[in-house]
Image (tube, rainbow, N blue to C red; front, side):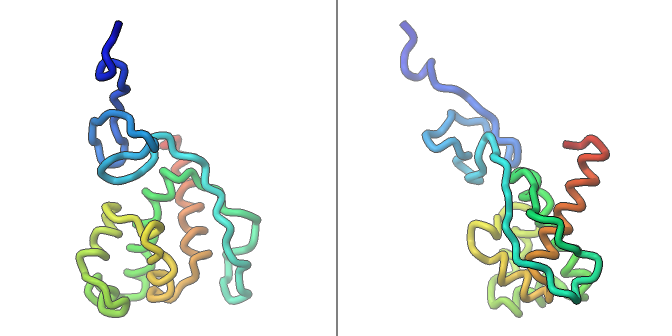
Length: 147
């Protein structure tokens, strides 16, 4: 009869690379990302007329794993478009520059700390535009068969 230790499933977290036993909640012990990411349907506010090419097509549907990978890229894109450095954005949000660096490198998740809206506001864009950019990048990744 196998012991309890032999029956435990060993899994590897894709984002952080940590090998570990399966946890009771199905999340990584280090980065707290689910091992089997669910589909995320993000409900976002209606676009305003001044948003230009971002037309309402319904819900933004991106797998959570890809959203966590593409969101930092979108933040970097809009920060550089605004002509800001990480230090400038951190000063505007009154948070440490190291947190901005972690968000942009994917080490910190702004969705879990409710800073997504604050960062979007400080960048001068809506959450809708950021999610739409992530959706467009996900479409490019899908077309290139990276998903």
